[in-house]
Amino acid sequence: MSAPVVGRFAPTPSGRMHLGNVFAALIAWLSVRSQKGTMVLRMEDLDTQRTSADFADTLRDDLRWLGLCWDVETPPQSRRSAVYDRYFEKLMDEKLLYPCYCTRSQLHSVNAPHLSDGTYVYPGTCRNLTTPPPDRAPAWRVIVPDRVWQFTDLVQGDYSLNLATACGDMVVRRADGVYVYQLAVTVDDAEAGVTEVVRGMDLLSSAPRQMYLQETLGFPHPVYGHVPMLLSPDGRRLSKRDRDLDLGVLRQRMTPAELIGALAFAAGLLEKNIPISAAELASIFRWEQLRGDAICLDALP
Ligand code: GLU
Figure: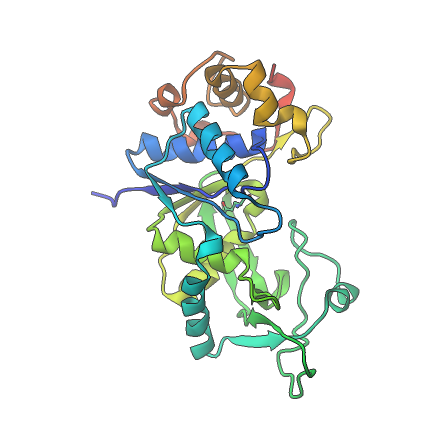
């Protein structure tokens, strides 16, 4: 028998969920529930300027309203820096880290962003630095090998990326001491025993970065599923600025079953746009039915 599935929601509590967030959460939940697995909730609040406990409360309330309940909530990232310290030390002991003193403008002047999330390819400027600038706290980078990372995504199929050419040595801790998403998410998923990571397509290129950190820290690789982005009727990607499609507005206009039915129909999971609860949809959910390309929201009421 295969091991029980553990999935997760990892929202950033920086505003109201928009439909794209709802869609990724729905698919993650359907996959776990259809396999009788465990769902973990974790608030990704590393950026304490943009996130708040109030947004986190609203997020929990919105997930409950949708019928997407979780089994365990693990502590938010803002309270886990002592845990991240331990893994940072491990990377340091393995001589995989070096301090980087480059300023943002230095970094941006050498290269154009390479990855879809705006990551710049780091040319390794500080890798062999002999005289660090005085009185400046450094960021810390992990050395990435010149190697291709390959995996088969549940939605996007085969995907591969060479981190050395796609992003170069990665920052794991910023100069202000805050750990970055890639390290935190790798540690948190592994410590929670997550076996299946389902999230938006915008994070596809993060998977190889996390796979590299998993390998260096001795964690197993989860299965990945990156769900298509939702586009507004004029072809733009949805963001937290699209207030008309956030849950604050949608909850006034629709029932949870209407919203889930419309999303499931747009994604290819239902043949007709009919109201359906998350629980009912879980009983008929199959990964093969999910469309892999971007979904335009014309179909929504
Ligand atoms: N916190 C991220 C977000 O809200 C998701 C990160 C992840 O699922 O790995 O977009």
